[in-house]
Structure formats: structure tokens, C-alpha cells
Image 1 (spheres, rainbow, N blue to C red):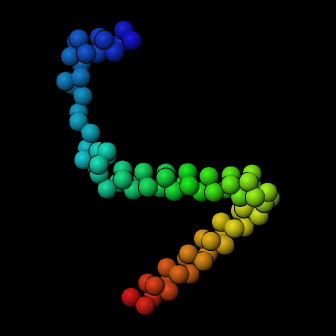
Image 2 (image 1 turned 120 degrees about the vertical axis):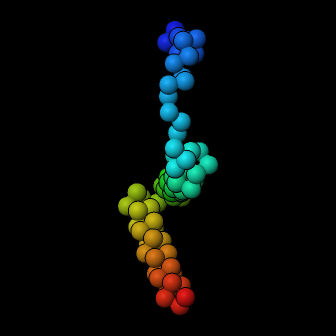
Image 3 (image 1 turned 90 degrees about the vertical axis):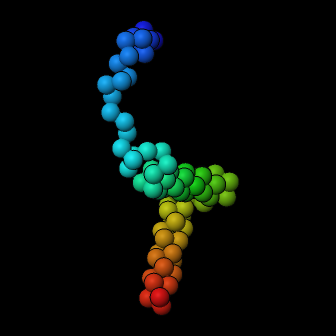
Length: 83
């Protein structure tokens, strides 16, 4: 707490460089990272639902997500081939 108060009162904050626009909270890079984090949390909750609520074994949940990944890759490949 004392270090933060000294940081403000001694105006040490003036010597810090601003964050680059690439790493700003509203930048494309950070928005993409946020979307990936949300996707990983969705996958984690989906795994928990499959294993805890439906009683599917862990390896079965991995198989479901693996097959979903393969299917999604095939669909995206077909769509990109058509375009």
C-alpha cells in the first residue's frame, strides 16, 4: 500500500510509457485473446457437463471434443474450397 501511495504522490507514473495500441484493451489482438479465453472456458464447462451431469467418462468427453474438432475442420475446409 505504501509503495502505491509513493508511486502516486512522487508522480512516478509520469515516467511510464503508455501501452502500445496493439496491446490496448480494445485492440483486435486483445479482443481475439478474449474470445479464445471465452472459448476455452466454454469447452471446460462443456467437459464438466459431459462428465459430471451425463456421467460420460473423461476419455469419452475427449472423444466428443475431438470428433467435433474434426467435423468443424471438415466443414470449414469444404466451405473454403467452395469459395
